[in-house]
Length: 449
Length: 171
Image (cartoon, rainbow over all chains, first blue to last red; front, side, top):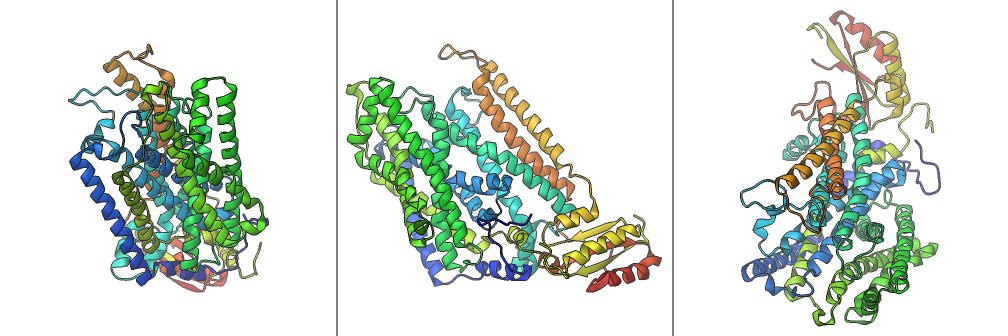
């Protein structure tokens, strides 16, 4: 039970101090918080305005047309689904592997999963010409006699992303319940009522802990194959079609690795400011950030290998369309995005092999942002460049996002951070219970470990 | 549980003393114990020797039910609207397995939560009598249910076992 290797910190804190330190993050917010919230809301409103404009005017206000019918919207959808993945990696997969260093960071990572999915879920709907008919995606018998094609990856996607969203919310909330009980017990007035309601009467009895522990384990065990299936299925949205640059068997593992790569970077991007603002250095130590950086080296290696394989096969297969697509990606209209992708995802992350860079907060933060940009560029290159340059030169075209698409992109980014800002003030951002599990329990006969 | 029993609550500050007290109470024949703790600890589980949680059976049944739902949904819907595309069979099992898999996970997860809620009798709006807010902070609680005439005895035992506070928990 007790963590005892060099990558697992030992914390010498009392249970009471943990409660006090970690609930401090929920104290009334200062001016800075409201200023950031205000800016965020303005961007969000601008995004909503752009979407309303798109609905009223028609999907033509985007630059989506033949041949590029999937652009920023679908690229960003894939990007956010990917971001979600590392939250589940940290909360479920590292839980199954008994990596105790995950305990203080998992709450934030899991919250990121839920919020990223809430953001991703908007995109297929935004992308629809008639968004009010989105429920046609659901396979139920209805008057319009829609044909539900279960052989289509787009239908699989509905099931995969829907399941992922529901399971992540359930997993997130289950982990929260014991902490909500702590908040209930420490609060008074209306807060006590609301958190008491959310804690559902949790009391920490032996019976509750036993069933809770069992349920948590099984949820983690279910979430693990789920998370791998989700991005595989998202990748099949592309790989199942006969478009050069998409039709490849490497897509599923390549997308899953990319998803975790981008998500780990996003966890760093979020944790670093949070740690500083809430003064959580005692809980989110440099070791935690360093371990995330180590994981990024692993995913970065898989990314580099995948890029290499894709390009090698494009040449070695002798398929002229495939080869032409990759030459176009590197030297055509999307050159900048392509080289950003290669440099930021598969070259710069290797700087983390140097301990000094891995332990420097400034470097960690900078590289994490570069990877975020790089991964978005990757989604954009895969989707945009392949469609722009398919088989017949007659049907080639280029695509640049319009101001409406970019405004909606900014708006949904604000939407993601809006959830995060609310989360930071309304819920414990670090799991009190799981941090308490890390520290030695109070013993009269001294510490027994 | 008849009406004459009462619950006595002992509050402890240290885990080792606490698990010792649980063992002693059980040795004395008091098996109707309620334990409160801020964190799950294996030491407490070992002292109580409780049986395995049945939540796993809920997970299994939910998963099986989800898988079957997926099969029936895809096959029945396709047979109901038979349209051949790409020369593929109407019932194409391989792609349908994707739906089967997703629904297995979905139903399995929901059944797990349901199993947990049923087994721990949540949600409830009122807290169980005897609960103390310190239990979510750093204190351990041991509730012992005993007959009315044994109250004094149990209280003495708990005090001797090292409880820093002993009181009636109400019923």
